Image 1: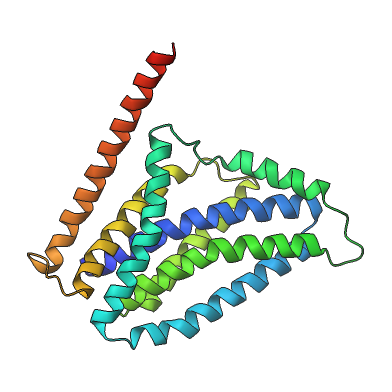
Image 2: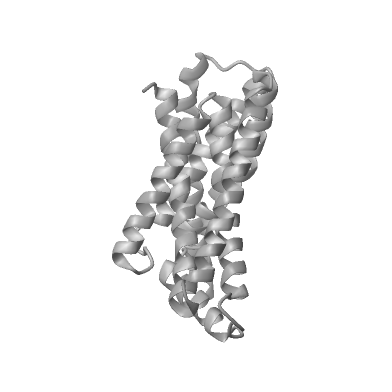
Length: 249
């Protein structure tokens, strides 16, 4: 496996694991509270839509000229990557609450218990919430699979990495039959934000016609720079919060 393929696999795997954990928490809360039949129907419908999206858009993206493709992919990755990275920096600095799967499970379970009971065998609430949760979380996974895969003409490899991540989360979740609170989700989001931002910057600049010194060898340097700047921002935010606390006290 080349270094480019390894980077693709790691990026897609980490992002897919994060999204799968969040979707699993919602599905588990619905199934445990209201029953599994309609919940799993919603999961199946969302999965079918996502698979069709990847199959339909994959060949279309790979047919674009590489320059245009990298410009589009780079811009989209920056949009998503900077969103992930911003939240990760704020969470690491303590300015934003970290994501808690147990708390999320309890919120979803309480909401499901308050919703009106199903009028028959089909529970529209469980179906629609499961469909929405898996579809929304899965769309980010599909987007990352398509962008990383199409840019390197390895959509199949990217989809495999995403599939492995989802299966591993399902196995762990079914074995525990509880929210996967021990998964270092916030740390993984920080890593994914750095990777998406770095790849977006690198590919976007290449697509715009700006050459990188050393070609592909410059990518690890971009990753290190983005990571370094992110950690500096975390440290500065912590210092700012410390000074604010001293003033208040």
